[in-house]
Length: 178
Image (cartoon, rainbow, N blue to C red; front, side, top):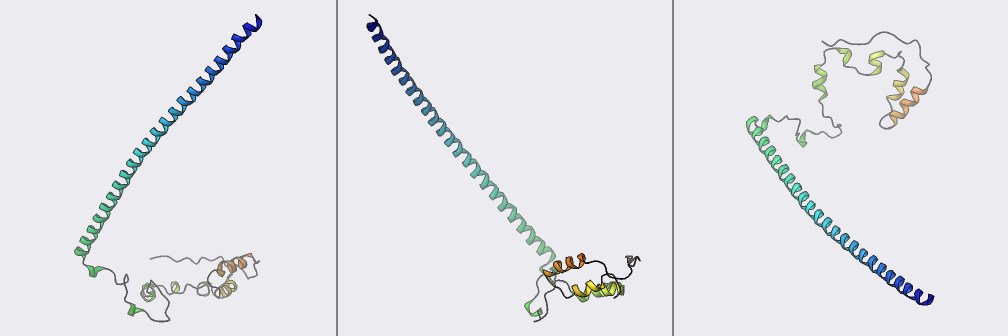
């Protein structure tokens, strides 16, 4: 009787385990189906977003093109109103103005030197301002020969050295602007 009672239990356990396996398989299928739906929905949403972004990009490009066209029209109107000859001559120089061996300069030195009234302001050198007896006369003499990248290195080396000059002048060298 015990063996007969154990047999239905085993059959019930086998049936219940197979039912559990079936349930698990169903749940997996349902989960996979939900996941597939979510993937499709996300893909659809992404596609919609791309369309919106593309539309925004196209409208931004159109607005930029319109703004540039408006700026071009305004520039043409300004040139017509003020005349093309009003452009400063320094903006476009003829190649004939160039002289071989003369360094490039955006500023015409002669015009600006003529505009300076005070003779002290025309000489911007150390010797012109402080003379040969000033604190930095020796450093100035050596640094005048240095050009380019090496200047910073040499300047730092001079600052590192101890002071060997004479008395330090405490006088004011300021100039009043008139």
